[in-house]
Amino acid sequence: MSTTLTMLPKSNVLLILWLLLTGLACAETPAENLYSTLERRLQALNSLDIRYEARAESDNALIEGRLVWVKGDRFFHDTPEWSVCETGREQWRYLKTQNTLIRENISEQSDWLPEEVLFNARKNFRAVQLENRPDGDRVLTLEPFDKTLGGTVTLTFSADRDYPGALDLRPPDGTVMHYSVMVWNENGPIDSALFTPPEVPVENLLDFRGAGTSK
Image (cartoon, rainbow, N blue to C red; front, side, top):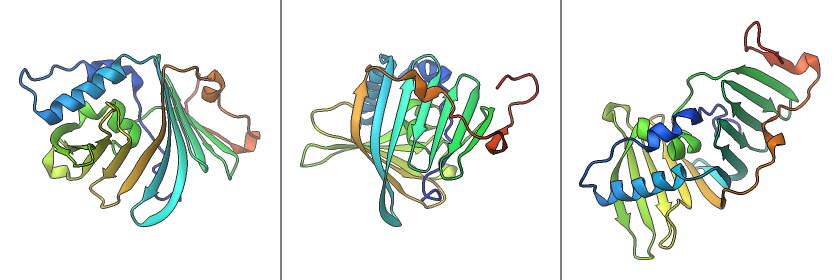
């Protein structure tokens, strides 16, 4: 299943406040208004802990995952096969089956990731449509600012919540990933040990951070 879930996130959490505080048009459409509400909610948080189930449209197998963000430049994404963590300027990735740890400086990665849509979408996406369904659900559609890129994102909100319960990513390559939010925990206690890379045998450590960076 590692081929259906992209391993390398780019949270760039230092940009979150800037992205969430970008100026909004005086007259917002319903889609923009709902998106702004989500942004303001995220802006006010000190931490966010999300547990989800994910599946690819081409594969009905479910994968359970966890996304953790803590204000102050810490981000953690965990799945059964791998964990990825960003702490300031460093990213580490742990491949569980291989018991291998990869450490490197943060670099540009894909924007088609659940954490990117939630935290950094203002950079590349705009709200274009809001569908109000008979059951009360609201489906918000996002598209890239650059329409030549193609692809869409949909966020589904239940009638009584202003945070998404489901997220569908449809990147230009044609793959479709569906994420169902099972737990959305705001401002709860977060174990700091999540952000510490695991110990692995020295032969299983790949360190690309460059000379002068301590391990």
